[in-house]
Image (spheres, rainbow, N blue to C red):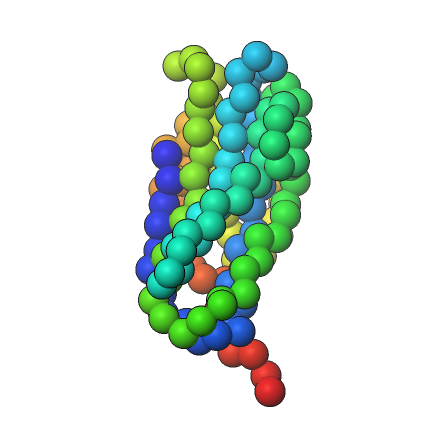
Length: 135
């Protein structure tokens, strides 16, 4: 599951979002969370976290705790930012990705299904800091 948001920005603007990945699976499955930035000329995908391989490894039923994703725009133009979580190899235990405009405090007991969390994230989602670079 994932969410995308389009926006306009100027060279040097910074985009920031806080995220917390929660795994509820076990090794041999490598559920992952990622961020994507689609620029006027290219796209960038960054692996944020996973159960065992890539980004911040959280292990079985672990959490990355709140982390900051930040990206500096390379040119003026229209951009798209997205965040997603992937459940790989099974259909029983899903991972969750919390999103907010500031680091939060989350208790990871009884975490809802990822679709619910991403919808909650969508309600909270905003470009946390498209700021103009001060000259």
